[in-house]
Image 1 (cartoon, rainbow, N blue to C red):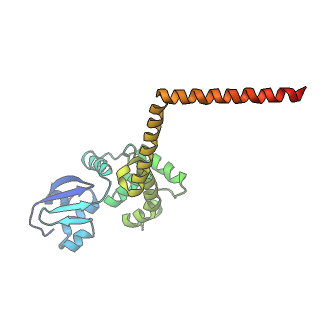
Image 2: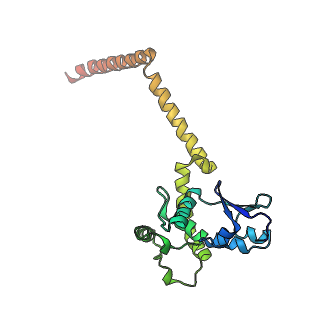
Image 3: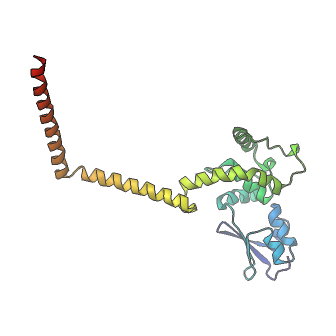
Length: 217
């Protein structure tokens, strides 16, 4: 990289990581290591979503929690799924950063294969298609993976989109209505109205029985 500062900052989903240029050069993630060879800002923006030249900060609009687990792999050599995150979504993050299913622990590889089989996709063995690079594999996979992740976020993360906010608002409204109805049902006037309704129904039933009795004679 032909930029002035020796420290590079990776901003992944709002979480910042600082590395020296030497570390970036030999970084285990291909997308990150390729930054070192970039000579212009245009080349940088082909690898990341935004760039702040003043702070030498590279912005990636990716899953922050997934990148935490990917960084654990960089440090320890063990790559496992993020609890609560769809396997396909995590795999798409792996492909984005330049990792493959072979980098996963054996148990996680089995889970990923099973997940792919469930939705009717082919096996994840990279030996089956060596001509397909990470970018093409990401495009092929992320269509359905992103849909599953979008559905999860819609119901679990209210701030993820306006649709999720609407669903969350409707849920809150129903909760408030239920609480109001529960509180109102404990008021004396409510109980009086209920008793009057029961008494009126009883009287109507008695009258109906009285009218029916002579007709049976």
